[in-house]
Length: 82
Image 1 (cartoon, rainbow, N blue to C red):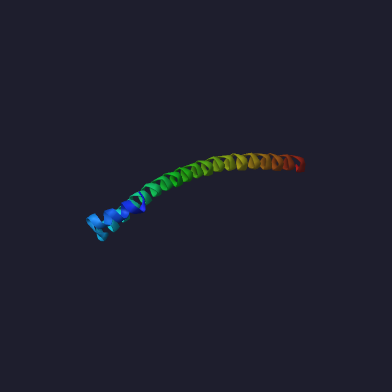
Image 2: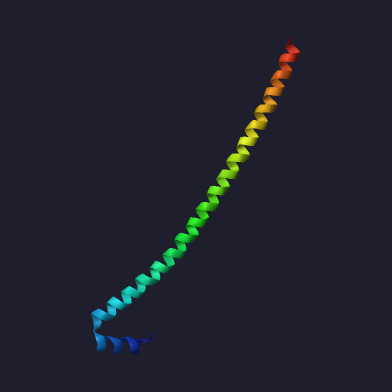
């Protein structure tokens, strides 16, 4: 839409109506882009949550392994002290 079209539209229907239509178009475009952004953010948060769960499981396994090694070493020490 060029300036002549906008000028003709203003002279035909009036400035307030053209302003309302322009603002309605702006809100529609903004809402559309916000929906896309929210969807991307939501997917990013879901991916982050999955990564945290995987890291938690890995940490639990590591703690179990370290605890098992520590207990074995302690048992070996107790056996040597007897």
